[in-house]
Image (cartoon, rainbow, N blue to C red; front, side):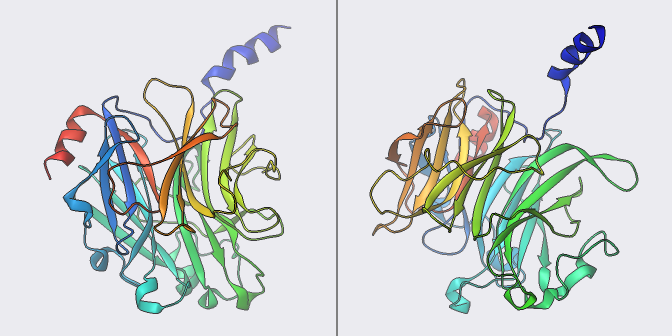
Length: 340
């Protein structure tokens, strides 16, 4: 009995994987622009009514930071785990240049002020040499035929242990497809980045449900003590679905096909991003409805368990919203961006 009581007392202090939440003044929507393949900002006080920063133009030069194709798509932004800086990841891709839905790598960024960014580009075609653990197991016999590395996102994992014994790493998860190496569809993979955020471990499979999956968004949900992953699945019933798991690495259950984002007939959506409103324990779910003309960026509501999706509405004030992510802001951060 004493052992059980001791374990119960320890439970609230077990570190879980999640990005640092800080700021009670407003929100940053960091996204790919619908006008082009660059990364744009918009800010808001209430999480639905936004205003573009720099008129929706790029916050940095895509050509400078995306060294493979010169386009930065699918921006995901968060704070460093110590709260002293900011991190971003994007898909390195320019569909306008290549005229294909193929790409070959991702970009990792870090900043001290949300304005000036340093970046590292990872071209997965180059194979083991680009990763920080070249001697570890490879997912492919031939990396050079990789055709897609899409929509990377970040979640901090305090339990990850590096070979030198150091604890804590940024789990970067993304979808990847290498058809010439025997892969039949896009699957979710993950790597780890260190505090410097310019080193990346080799890809490892996150799960495989037997059909293509892209655009994963993982959050820890306090209400049930599980990790929830919202994801676009291409097999079976289309839509944005939720899977859950006890750990970041799974096992990830098959998605719940009774409770999902599919509100308006046959409209198609992707690029899901979940966030909480300041002072609330319920969730907001953002996504791009790409089958409409013009495209619509929607935000719906979910309960504290990240279930029961309802009440979708259009984001307001953003000229060209697309696939992106949300981060809470302090008053100082909000005013710094507003002054750009």
